[in-house]
Amino acid sequence: MIFKLDHSNDDPFNAVFIEKLIDPRNLGEEILKLIEIIGCMQFRIEELVDKDMFMNAEQAAFILEKHFGFKNVTQEYFPFIEETFLPEEEWDVFNEYAVGPTQVPIIQIDLYRARESCCGPDYAELMSKRLPEAEEFDKDMCALNAFYE
Image 1 (tube, rainbow, N blue to C red):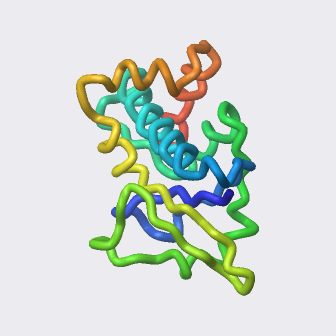
Image 2 (tube, rainbow, N blue to C red):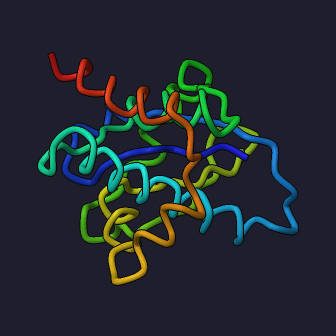
Image 3 (cartoon, helix red, strand yellow):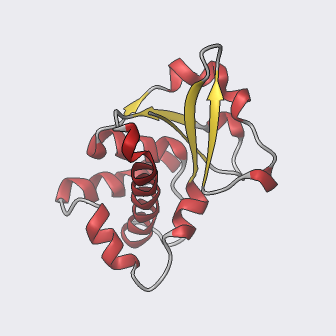
């Protein structure tokens, strides 16, 4: 499945496309899981680096590729990016598209809305469920600060 990571308030050309093989019968569960992982990654960067730092699509893709088995396929799917543009009022936590001549399905995840959908009193429990408890993961999350320098 192809996922587009984006943020409704960012330049639409800053989106990143990632891919992961998933069982289509579990698509809904896998979308929810990815949304939760992204939201929890944002919470973790706020804890480790800066409460005001917001992870962009490139940073999210880096972590998802290194720690969650995704593959960055931006070069392959970037020619279809304009087919995934939406007016801001139509954005949701995720939106579905079919792009290109073969109508490849793409699920767009809004990074901000992913974070917001994970807020609540159980966010710490969700973080322990969705994020690896590894020193290397936290080290990579802290290193995301270099994207801004």
